[in-house]
Length: 109
Length: 119
Image (tube, rainbow over all chains, first blue to last red; front, side, top):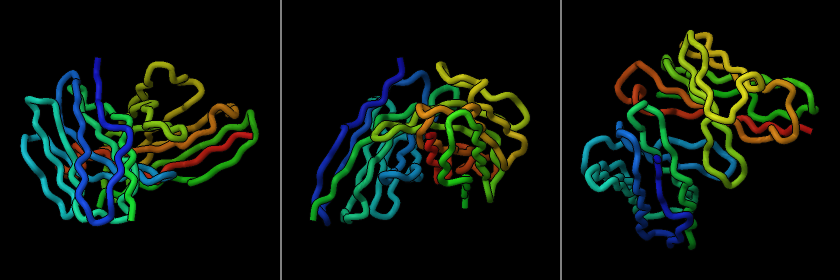
């Protein structure tokens, strides 16, 4: 079956760095996405990785290793507004998104 | 770029009535639109995938006669919840995948969601 695993909840301190991991097993691979979702709102797109390596975009970076079925989202200089759920999703061979359950990130002052 | 709108943002209706939700891609053409449902504190659940001009593909367990989807153009898809019941109360979110450039071809962009409450 298809499976996306990410931690349920993480806590970090304002100004610090946090890494949210995602491992996946899917039928085919056409890219991995990270989305941010604040409570009561729809998800917003953060990043897309289809090749191995690190993609940096401001305070957020996303890493992919296809051979290991592994990705992480790195958030630097954490701000209180970064408190949200972070969703990992993999596009399978049918170009459908398979979603992880999301990681709730709690930022403390 | 890649903005998706959804209307209405919030709707309250009586049990037995039908509710239509619109999803529009504002600055790109969406070949494929997706409808999701999200219950509180749960992940997104894909309900159906619609391609412009063809019938929607529903996920297992989703009643196609209850959740009518029409993808009439490259910028508009509608979801109609027919004969809504309290258990249909949920957060309905659409997303669109486009053709205008590589970025929109591969990425799903989400509408802001519609919160439905059936009394």
